[in-house]
Structures are given as C-alpha cells and as structure tokens.
Image 1 (cartoon, helix red, strand yellow):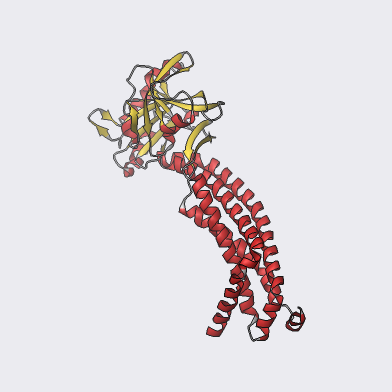
Image 2 (cartoon, rainbow, N blue to C red):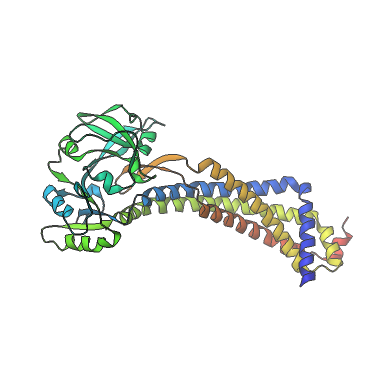
Length: 396
C-alpha cells in the first residue's frame, strides 16, 4: 500500500513539475474553468441576494392578515372596521400607545431608474403609526419620520439608491399630489428598503381608496402566539381573512424569482462547463501525448497502471481547482454587494437588493470545478495507462 501511494506521489510530482513546459494548454484549461465558476457564482448570487432580501424581511413574531383567497396585498381588501377587530385580537403585542398593528395600503407608482432613466414600478405603502414598531428592524438613517396627515414620505435605502428623485428633501409628483422626502430608512437589507412609506390616511384619498386597507401587519406577543391569533380571526364569523406569518409570506414570494434565476444560471453554466470539459480533455490528452516515453519508462520500472491513472486525474484536478479558485475570487470581488433591482412577480413592483456571494455558493462552484477536472482527466488517464510499453519506448 505504501509503495502504491509513493508511486502516485512520484508520478504526480513529475507531472506537476512539467506544467511550466505546457503552460499554454494548462492556462487555457484553467481559464475555461474559471469562466464557468465566475458565471455560475455571478448568476446564482442574484438569486441568493433576492432570496436574502425577502427572507430577512420576515419575522416569526409578525403576522400578516389578508382577505381570504388573496395571494398578495395587491388582491386583498380589508375594511376599517375589520382592521380594528384584527388589532384587538388575542396574541397581538401592545405598547403604551396601544396594539402593535398597522393597517396598510399598497400601491404602485412609476419612477425613473437612476441608471437608465426608464420608468419602473415602485411600491408606495401607506402605513399606520405603529408600522415602525411592528417591523422592528426599520431604522432611520437620515432625516425624520413623516408627520401624520401631511404629504410626506420616508424612502427605503434601496429605493433611494435605485430610483431618481428620492433624495432627502426632494419633492416628487405622483398622481395629482406632491410628496416631500423627509427621511431615509434601512431595514436590514430586507424588501422594505425597496418601498416608500407615507401615512395611510393621506394615501387613501390620493388613490380614492375610501376608508379601506389591503393588509394588517401585527406584531405578536411571541412567535408561539401565532396559532391563537390566527384561530381568533379565522373562526370569527364577521371576518373573512387569511393569516400568515410574515416570514412565510415573503419566503413564498421569493420562490418563483429565485427558482427562475437558478434555472437560468445552471443552464448557462452547464453549457459553459461542457466547453470547459472539452478543454480539459484536450489539455490532458496533449499532456499524455507529450509524456508517452516518460510514462512507458515508469511502467517498465515497475510503476502500476493505477498510479498513472490517478496521477493524471490529480493533475487535471489541480488545474481545475486553480481555475475554480480564480473564478470564485473574481466573482466575489465583482458581484458581492453589487446593488440592483428586479421585479417581484407577486406584486409586479421593483425590489432593490444586493448580490450575495455566500460561502455555500463558493463551495458549490468549487465542487463544479472539481467535477469538471476529474471527469476531464479520466479518459486521458485511462489512455495513459493503456499505452503499450514496448512501442512507447521505441518512440524518440
């Protein structure tokens, strides 16, 4: 066993020492694999960033109440009287100002993107006074909160970066009203950072919504209180509502977009991986062809075919890992934290988010590189082990 391992080490070492003599083909193979890894990480970081923006928005101790049968706030509607019943339900947390429940409106407005100038759908949310306490992770980074009863708005940090006219102190024209930006807020990178908030009672007449709302966000006394809160509302004969945890609601909304992006990423990376695989095969066949006499000499000295096969595959694996590491590093530097926006298919509004190159994503990409390297070295390795010793030794 020791002799077998020493043979592998000796042949592999000899192979790696000759790489500078074959640097052109070796670099080409590594660059091809680096490209595959960079594309895979880049595309999947979009899905990971979007998923993170949606999931960090969800708290287990916050519930969302919608009209029964609705799959989003856009298709929901709740009367003012029902919002009061919801706020007084069992399980809702309270502070000195009363129940921590926010009856809200959700409308879509058009604003130009800073990067392209083209119009995009931006969510304008009318909230109640308790909204900041209900969300928990919302904090002002500049300016102040809007004053109730006035045409003032506070803007999520993501929306402020992506869309024109949302700078602090600016006034935007939406519909027949002018709205002044009085504050910028953060929300831990969550979806709320893509929104604009104002007083719901000001937004209602501006969009002819009467005294109706679309959803109620309620902070619960604890995550365990969700069952009692949900049962109290869904069994109330005067209400026709559905109750979901905020975390589940946003996780469901992220599924369609992340699945689509991941599918595209895997298909594109798969096609590129096929090209890189052929590149690795060509490199390793060339490597074997250049060392035919050397391999035959080793076999004549007693080296087994097993160590030859493994050494060639290890050489291919090293090239793949080097290429994978380079590609992963470039992807991390280029994509991690890059901010953009995309449409949320549930609400047809833009969600601003940052690409996220997670450690798990980097590991996944390196595994892809290793697979390409091992598979690309397999057939050349078998070919090397099957070279007739006598015929190879006669070659000059």
